Image 1: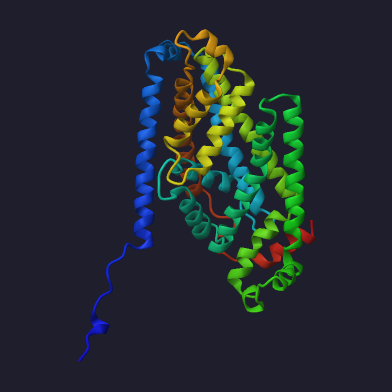
Image 2: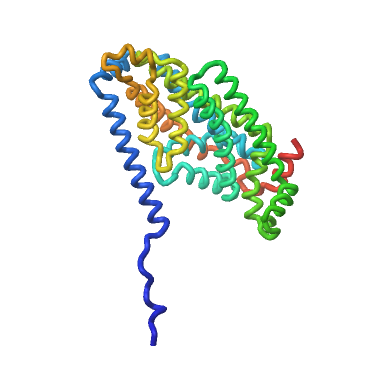
Length: 360
């Protein structure tokens, strides 16, 4: 009698085990990079800058704290604006959730993303697949905002009036065109168009697909997308201001152009880090700063010929960590104290979708 059916297959690592290993390794690399950044900041040529921290005025410290807190709020508003056309949640609730997710972004295992799914699904009754479409839509809008900035920077290699004109025009035009294209695939008309390019009728008629398809409703709302990317640009400017103020506290004479490059780099690396942003942003920003020589004035004023930018980067990170921890605590308290807008989960989501595009 054959026992072939009872013989276990060779043990192979599961996808989940591989994913966990990658996250752990990535987080360990981030910690190593953070240690490297600290070592760079503590080099002898940087100690003079570090000593300036004790001379920081209350106004300068308060400004850094406010700018970091504004960034948390702006990102929460962006998430709220993107979802608002199809599902109503209080803006303050989304900002509170974003505060929790922002703090968890330091850690691996995509806890930041997981927290959004858990809170908005269990508390706000937003379907899981709708949340997935929401996050993807927000990521697409982020790309539409950042791509013109990066391409313009590569082209002009400096931030001047032309840079602002081209960048802002690129963001506005790109967002508007992308929204118009998404609008063509939204609603029943969009489903008909999708069916013509290979989406079967059974699939397009399922509840799961309709929730995924709601991403086109979000992206197809012109006012929401433009407002979201306007806040994205403002957020990047707040990042730049944080570096500019921190550098001034440490008496590192960087230009606003350099601060914008540092802020954008810091933001992009943090958003793209797959295993937690701790360490990767700091090391990446320091590397870019030294690669492009930030700043020519600072280079000429340091005896070693090296830019002591590491201290500035870690100063920004330290202030941000304090703010994010406080905002996360406030977010948890807020969500516990406030009832969901729809505690019974009786949203008529399809009605909201229909109202959002054709009705506004």
